[in-house]
Image (cartoon, rainbow, N blue to C red):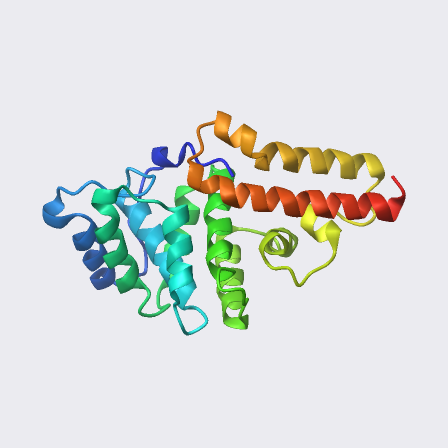
Length: 235
């Protein structure tokens, strides 16, 4: 999950969302206008969008529980000096899910030419949704809307979903490839996924330590799916 270039993203205004909430979150994060935006970006607009989208993800099933906040904090680890401000912004945003579509649109716009970083954010939302061990129907509905705003196809959504929600047993969905693919195509797809998600490669590219846990989990799921396909095909 390459994350090393997220700080280069340029923030833009959030369209269509209540200026009151945006202003309140900005005031928390940047008191007096001089605060340094936390998390991994130098853009306060990006920071606000990620916090709000994550907090509202936690609220999607009606109850935002502590483990979801802990997963958010683990993934988007803020400097100690900024942690209290991030928590305050998260707590405010989790009051309801209103306007989450606009935050999704903002992130999609920021990452229009940065597909890997966009997927980082989407996988983080899935990690939050799956944190309590229950994948609620309303969480699914929320993530499908975000997926649509991010420009993902139904097949791409199912492939990412299968990495975090273990009620789908189809290994081809996990690998993101059709059952009619030949053995060589499946092998190429598997190797491509390993290159993208292997923790050693991410470490070499400077990805923060907190993302490696998700990368390890993702890689284990990919390996298990590939092993199942190999057994099925007698490879």
